[in-house]
Image (cartoon, rainbow, N blue to C red):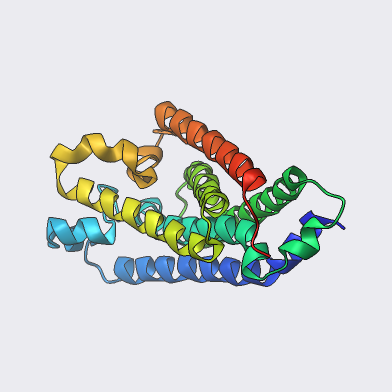
Length: 265
């Protein structure tokens, strides 16, 4: 029994739909950029007229929105939301679905250890995340190149995709750790999604109040903001280290708690 291939097959349709969705999101965003650019009015001037609180909620930052790369940087927040939602739900469901679907007994009567089951499930989730990230990368390269008007954008897109990948993996293991710890696996996905929403809302609150800047360490959405990553800024080493520590810690939590728990069959 190949658990990895079984999980890949199980999540195949979902991955296809999510990949199509991210493609349509990039297409919609860059089409709007073209419409703004052809209107003759500066996008920056339009954004400047919007109240600061609304700009924070909508994800508008200090990027130059007259450039395709700057507009993509603003769009990146929405792509990141899609990617992290996909990752956190995947991490939670891929661990908890055996108990949710009452198939634990069928799986664990096989001559395979829990550690091997978890490893194969996490590898399948990781592979799904890589494919989703590549789908976003390819979509962005193709569509942004169409509207960039000769601007070099591939490097900026690549570094943003690296930032997205860190957060995808982080939220995936948040989901898997919750599924391993919680006694009711059906609620793991909803709790994981709630944590994602709270951290996103915290990032907005920080944007609204500069005095709360110190709280940025509590929300992954402030780790790799497009305005800091693009144009030579790169990935902040501190936040890369924090992300890796959190990922490793949550992986340990997933293994330790899932191996000890009493499964609902």
